Image (cartoon, rainbow, N blue to C red; front, side):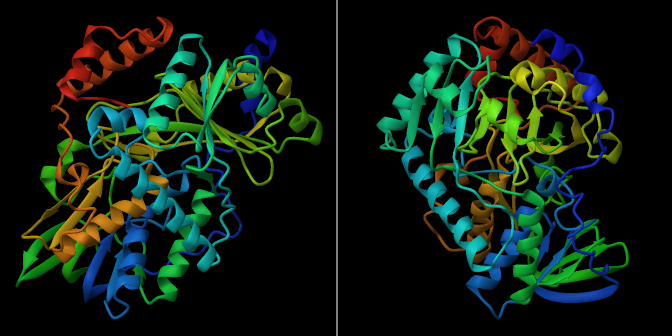
Length: 471
């Protein structure tokens, strides 16, 4: 095991510095940018999942509504085409976070989350979206002895919520019969609440479905300003303007056009490796016939899964924040993190020594202090926003799109009545306090992982205040 981990960086020698999912010969060509002025009923800003789901659902709710979507680059090029492809039912970043923040409505949130995941699966089927959708579930893994009890407690929490048939606790032998690693001690398998998919192909499929329903698209059209205009809204772009009765903002990690939203979001960078396809012998060495998504239970955690062509995606661990925030192309790559991830990979799977990585990439995540999305309106209800998905946006963005459309309609719904929807997270402090606080939190999380999960006074104070930092 030690030799494999020591030689791990050499496995990166031929890795392409680009997202595997976007390195696809079937990637659709970009649509023309907006030039001049145009009008619409609903303008959707952002061509990631948040904007795509909003546009699609808006047309499904009202086929006669004129919907226009503008995207600053190309559809799915940012987080929606770079993530691990874990499509989770959870709207609260897991049961533990939901219990800590909304214990009285968690059962309802879990029900809505499962319905949302069912609706995603139905959309993929109805629109023939070729995104390798597999509802295999996910296993949370204990890689340290103290985490076993934490997983058992989580299984008990799930049972109290009526989900005992959905979650299965796996001891060491049962877990290693599913996926074999010498680092695994136990696992908790959510059998029905997570699907694996190809994230870029989901985005491209949603784009096609939107266009089939009549949504207009302009790519390479960045929204630069938002202002009221004669009882409606005007959005300025590099070569024109859009005049819209209503606007839905799906910009997430990028600076919001509603300035008061910006303190609630910190863009952090997550990084990922993709292996070359495994041989039949390599697949037999690790098992993994159930093709579940996997993640370990550390504060600095890894997530990993199999692709349709038998590669392993391996990501997470480091949470990289740059002073002042910002989303820039030069932040996408972090060689030190790639080398660390490669070492960790071969510590987990020493039987795969000699396997090489084909791709390495990173991307920004819209982190907020409660780890799950928040919502709101601006400009007298003519503008709605959803942001702060903190790494679980593949599934939850569809729910967020429903909330934004509910808010724009002005109607009270089962979603808008939720405390989760009506409340906001605590904002992050300005710099340099933000930089210092994130640094102390990162150090404390690393220390807790090394001290059997024991949280120091800083983390306990953060817990009490309701502040958190995660990816």
